[in-house]
Length: 292
Image (cartoon, rainbow, N blue to C red; front, side):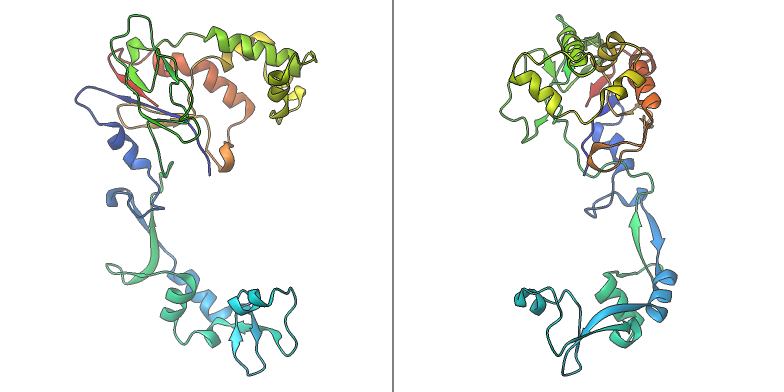
């Protein structure tokens, strides 16, 4: 599972956030719109497995075959096969009387009614399986002093008790969002560099916690950034992992994997964060709505 922020740009009278996200939905819950799905045929592959492959089974004293994960072995609370039982290799054709039985009972596939073939449907362009406007990033957007737009989304359970400043929202017009460097965050990152790279001693428990949860060595920061000022400027500037523009195109700095780790290189990550405002904000219509 991974959580990441996506900036969605909508225009008046154009597609909604839901409509812009729809083409990139995974089909893990079975509710992805049909128009974005393609059928993945697995029949030939599984037919070969059914005919030729073997599986580990446990043969009972009475000759009955059981799977090693059978519930009765769990109840015995032992690691070894009980006396009188024997581990054996068995072909699927000996366990299941037909290919259909094998596919439905062992593999869990249903035959596609239109094609009369076994397979599943997936979205080849899938990027997400669940989202919230706001969520873990509630209050990420900082409003300008005279802003006339700004709305809140839904809080995540991880931050539902946190106090969000009045000038922080989850959606607003581009012209009302302050994309300048967050000075408070800038100073925080400068301090982190001094602790991590320069070797300053932590002043309190809060600073100790900053170091405790950092997984990188100091060489990572030195190699990636030319100075603590560049590091702080990039890290305190606004950027999300991915962007959807009003034309429906998905932009991302890498391919998101498990546990929040993306495929992007250090250089790609740095370039994306450094160029985010120039590429996506400066070229956008100021009256567009930005949501994340």
